Image (cartoon, rainbow over all chains, first blue to last red; front, side, top):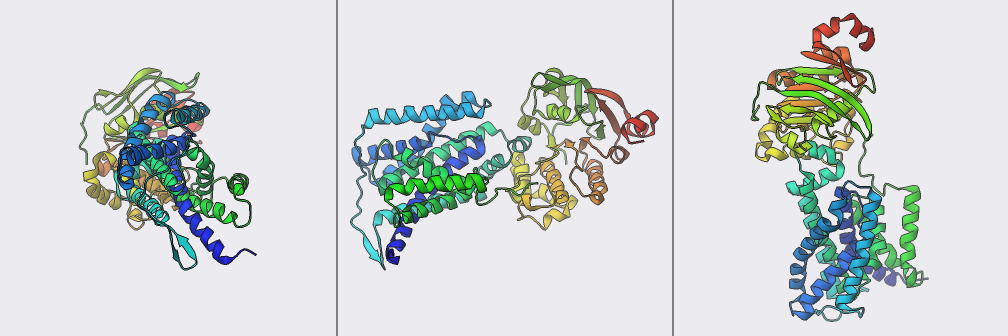
Length: 291
Length: 242
């Protein structure tokens, strides 16, 4: 029998890891809601965010929080630029075409990252020291910082969605693009804001992964499946669902380590995806109750 | 209630040809809607009524012909630009934002005039008191009739000159059909909003209309005074169910 304290430790690890997955999943599902396609290059957006922050943090010597803050607007600009160059010319085409283009973009980005930064894994310079015990659970200042940052991002997104016109408009387009247009909304303009927000959030998730683990060209791709799992669990296009889905996937993956070899963590995601696609393709929460 | 450019001309549709893909559905239709009037388009299923409305609201391209509103040519403009000109559109289904609350639906409705939100909201709550008690309810959880009212309210938030309605009583309980049509009449009478609507309840809609068009096979088969259409034996027999 596995020790309950160890399970508790894994749950805590899962919540922290899950909060990162949640941020990445919220970004992916947000873009899906407005543009109706799953961006397969999303993993590389995260990786790029981590490497940009690495440049500011390690090469330019900025503190990690400053590197984080500087990277986000750059990722927003990158994400909008990638849309202009790659996706916008195909808008209105077959969805599969755009999906394949995003897979192509993913390969290009991953290999450009390899060319620029190499394949050797690197890490951020942080002032954090070793962990301390809270009851039976060990936490590190890093994990606390990661978790609080993720929660802050979720709070900001919630604020944006419920208290600002631009956020409401994003949700409205996600619900019904034509009705938004009939209300006088020029959806192409909102697409820009959506990519900016999605890119910044992807970059943030990448930096948090780099803080928790290491930075490498495959880091984003490696968590992409978990992010897909979170998005499906929450109902594709449902940002709040992706938040819950991310936390659940994170906890499931980490707790599985108590029972299964740790290399099986990704299998858990496959099982969740398969079960949900067969039995609950709309996710845990139906995003609407429309007839 | 009207801040938009007033024009005697209202909506003018001339020789409109449109369709989907390679299939031409509307073959040269002329329609005029004065912004004081209620104009109802009736006709059998597949006559091209919805296609016509979609091209007037900008959701499908006009192949030939022209559309003018308030004196400006809007033939090739986007749906959001037509909304800006003062044309509000309520689709037949999926006409509210289901995951948004009633209040948020109305806020999206007043996107083009956000400062006017509170005032406009007061006016639509007078028309639809049922919505005033449900501002925090998600639109997706409302009944068909309430949702239809929210859809109308959302469209009125831009303070339109012309309201275009695709079957406003579809999916509404039978006892509410008259209420909704009366509300549309009130909106037209009291707020000076022109109405162009498609309606299955042809007789009941025409009774409240100024003018009527009968669309059949993508062409205008009859056009005239609503009363004349109601009294016309041929129209009655063919399109009003005898």
